[in-house]
Length: 313
Ligand SMILES: [Zn+2]
Image (cartoon, rainbow, N blue to C red; front, top):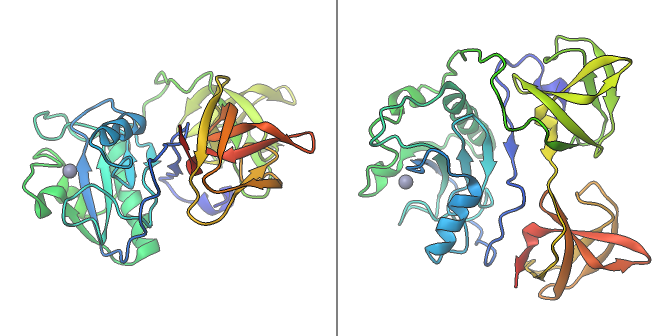
């Protein structure tokens, strides 16, 4: 997806990968077919994908059972691989994609926020675009549960129409102060004079470069740095949060068949320097956004692996 392709849409969403990456005990099996989407709620208003992942690990599962999670602020997270067998609706996991909403839509009469509702509509349309005309069901339609709750906007959701979003000017946001990395596929990302594609392009930031966010408005980040003395804005859709830790830990490589690529930086856009064998044990000395830097160097260069293909030991 490029910025140009999203221009003209009034509602833009993107699917984000939890960071640091969720660590599964083993790789989920590939699903034989995809015929349905089954929707759930967390029964919790503030849980993160990492929290749900931990709950599901505590169930003795290999990791989070849902394929996607949608926060109350409209953020969409990727959970278990989209093409793998989930663990979200007993007896119905072999042909379904599970989407769970943050929130308590059973005993809480709070309406689903517009941003979350619109993110659900977008995600369902996106998945139908990929997998064909999937049947939409609630967990309660296939199992003895109240999930996703009697206050879940089921009738409205089946209409698959976006709500008009109320504006929330100057809402405080925890994203201020975050470091983000530019995740465009090939080109640099346009920097604009305001929060939207209708504002003039005043510069660009390089792919994979990192920046500090000082304001979030309508899905756009204002950057700390100035561009020709002017405030610069970038679309949040082409960024990923950069998180850094410095505690070292051991991992096992959990690729299913092949060795794991070692790259010169924390992302698939970096050059492959070497590989590490499947099932080998490695020491990670730094993590950034779901990638880990190996203690070993490769011809004197730092080597990074995707932590998605590792498990902590
Ligand atoms: Zn459920």
